[in-house]
Image 1 (tube, rainbow, N blue to C red):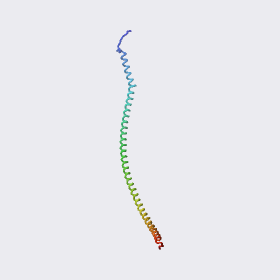
Image 2 (image 1 turned 45 degrees about the horizontal axis):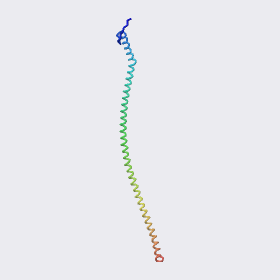
Image 3 (image 1 turned 90 degrees about the vertical axis):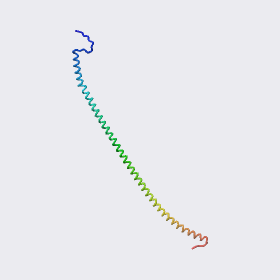
Image 4 (image 1 turned 90 degrees about the horizontal axis):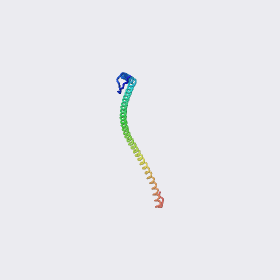
Length: 150
């Protein structure tokens, strides 16, 4: 047996070729068993992430559309509410004016009725006072003249 003393890390002999072949077989098996399935899973994940990003973008666009529609509807409702408010205010003003006019007419009617009643009471009071004053004048004249008047 011959002892070969070689300090080199790689020696070129028959084992190098066997190691190279077994390394290539190992690479082929690792590629088939591990790398291809792993790459397919990574690709599926990337496709899923891209799909999710697309869905998120679509959802954001739909959200923007809904926000825009809501703001348009809100503006339309505010405008309609303002017109209804204005109409109600004008109707209220007309109704208040009508009620005021009716109250004024009732007051005038009550005033005229009170005038008629007061005039009737004054006429009655004048008649009553006239009768009483005639009686009183007759009594005074009788006392002053000391005789009875017929």
